[in-house]
Each structure stands twice: as C-alpha cells, then as structure tokens.
Image 1 (cartoon, one colour):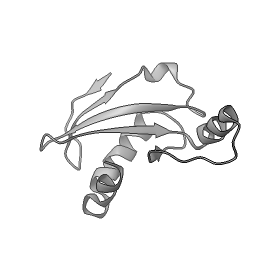
Image 2 (cartoon, rainbow, N blue to C red):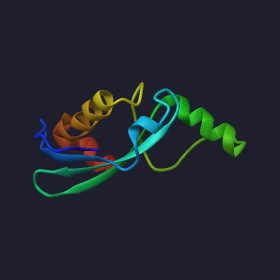
Image 3 (cartoon, rainbow, N blue to C red):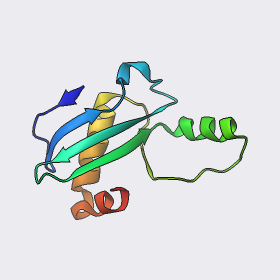
Image 4 (cartoon, helix red, strand yellow):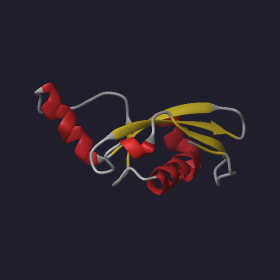
Amino acid sequence: MDSSTNWRGGIRKIQYLSDLTEVNPENDNIDVHIVLEDDREFTFTVGSPNNIFWCMDNEGVDYFFGQPILFVKYLTTENIERALSAIVEEDSGRWLKIYG
C-alpha cells in the first residue's frame, strides 16, 4: 500500500512493508517506510502499546528495550499517518532525528 499525496511536513511517500489488513490493530506492530520531499528515507516500527506486553510475555522477561517504536493507540492508516506527520513536523524535526 502506498500513499503518494503530499503531506504536511514534507512526506512524499508512505509505504507499509506488510499488509496492514493482516495486523491486529490493538496488539501488533508494522514497519513503515517514508520518503521525504528532500529524498531522505526512513523506516519506522509502528506499534500499539499492548504489543510491548506481548513481546515481553513471548520472550519470558519483564522488561523491553530495542529500537525506538513509534506508538499509536490502534494500528490504523489514519493513526499511523498522523503520527508519521507529527514526527516529521514537531519541534523542527527533533523527533525525526531521534527516531531516524
């Protein structure tokens, strides 16, 4: 699935690296690739908060660390694209530098 409309904050393209219809919106994660209007490219793991609990249970631990996850309440196109726009726009791109 691609979205090639121009986004506030300079996102030219959003590509879901898995089929969003196959994820559990309340307990899952998905990798999403974006291309900015200045040709920089970033890939984010976007997940629901419940997914962290699942990961800890799955690994048999009571902690979690790893690459920063961009959290959304539910994995929907609208929430993901709103979060990606925010990460590019807010605080002059500060969060893009941290996550990217």
